[in-house]
Amino acid sequence: MALIEWRKEFETGFAEVDRDHAELIDAINGLVFRLGTNPPKSLVQEVLGEIYAKISDHFAFEERIMRERGYDRYVDHKADHEFLLDEIRGIMHGVDEGPDFVKADVLIRRLSTWFTEHFKTRDARLHRMLE
Image (cartoon, rainbow, N blue to C red; front, side, top):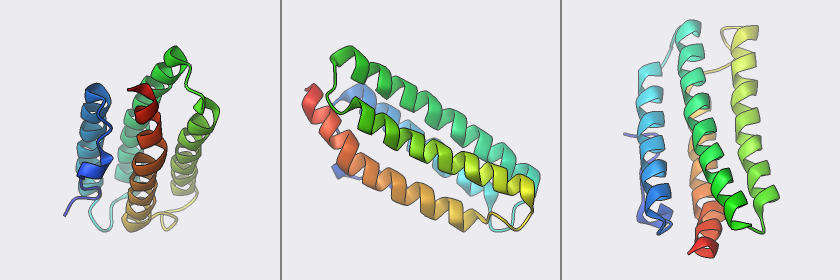
């Protein structure tokens, strides 16, 4: 089973963003699958770094669109992006601190919950406003 399943309700109607979201979900699902149930610390760091880079790239893409279009909730939306990036950095730091800090299921829950809610709320509003 995938970490995040693409659902119709995630569609924004903005083809480039929908494609980017679907690719991001596929990438995250693939990376988290690589972790398994009891991954070595080095693999956790590698996968977290890849997830962080992919998510950062996507957020930069969305934020550029918001700035170009003068989106009225840019500051709040960007803050939500920063919140997730801070969470991932915190997990990465915790992995450095000790081998038992992070388990794959903790990462899975955090990412799944955040993306599901973000897609349904902030991204849905953003893309309704951009149509």
